[in-house]
Image 1 (tube, rainbow, N blue to C red):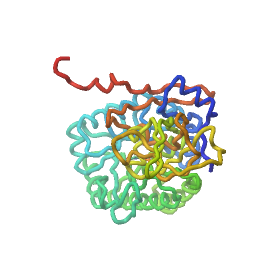
Image 2 (cartoon, rainbow, N blue to C red):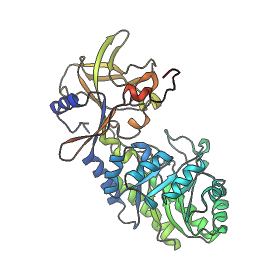
Image 3 (cartoon, rainbow, N blue to C red):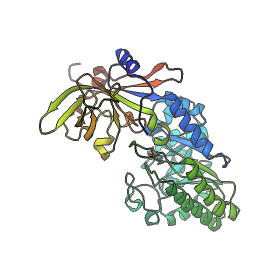
Image 4 (cartoon, helix red, strand yellow):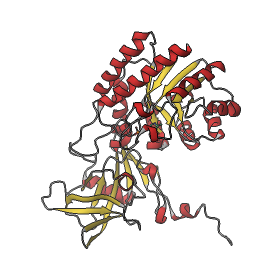
Length: 415
Ligand SMILES: *Cc1c(COP(=O)(O)O)cnc(C)c1O
């Protein structure tokens, strides 16, 4: 699939007069469409809910439009809870999936009435002590050697998240003994996974666990949260995950394990971030210098501090050059930023249209875990975030940081 930004090169050039590069642009229509498609794929499951993983794109304007689209929020920190609240997402439309959690974050989650998903069995008495008991308890299950994990998230046995199968029995038994009557279960074992089968396998594992826990402890589960992790095609030759196939595989497992054992109804929850906003975000930057040494380096006005994924995971992000899409003059280059760090590269040995200083470049699929992972190393400032509305207008949803912002937290003698 050819990757394009939903603006002409003239429109983009015009936009940079108001908002200097680099900036992030999000396509509202695309985000709404992705949310709709996921909900539609799971229409068969009454109570299906997608809790958008706030960490992927922590911006209130985005959360507001996701709320309008029927999504909840998956939060893992106090600021993320407050972002959800500010966007009008409250009570059981919030899933609080955190780890190594401080008491005040549990207190904030309880104040909002969020569903609390515990990362350890020891967190149950901790929660009881600091907030009293919540009405619903969910534990995060780490299947360990029962599941192979994938590249970004790694081997479950090495993972710091969740509890073992044995601990699940202990945890729910303790919760039941304390008088809790509403239960859910969670797992998250994949990230950026493109194979539909993987999700059905995970569902099967979780449903079997629900069956075994329900029988052993005589408790009833309200929901099974399959986590996020549905991947997106970062490379043009990759295909989007077939959500109908994911849903059909999960439905089969549901019928065979949940329905067949009298455990129906069970709500299926998910907490995808990337799937919803990833493909609909663009980092727009401008070529500053072109340097030719042992290789050719195209230096942008954006850096790894704006988009860390390539430097952090060697992640691929497609790059296009508006206005030069059809040029036959091409060159293999490294696309770099200005950090004093040699892994500050958006692309290595990438075949691109021949670039000149001043050209705009678009870095695709930056709508999740993009701006959110930004940092200030080397005194780099976080960029603005813009929202392209369905009517074609563009709205500023986060201004760019200024030098004043950078200095604001310093405590200097004599000031
Ligand atoms: C990061 C994360 C997600 C979202 O992951 P995506 O790959 O963006 O779908 C969901 N749940 C938890 C607990 C996470 O840590």
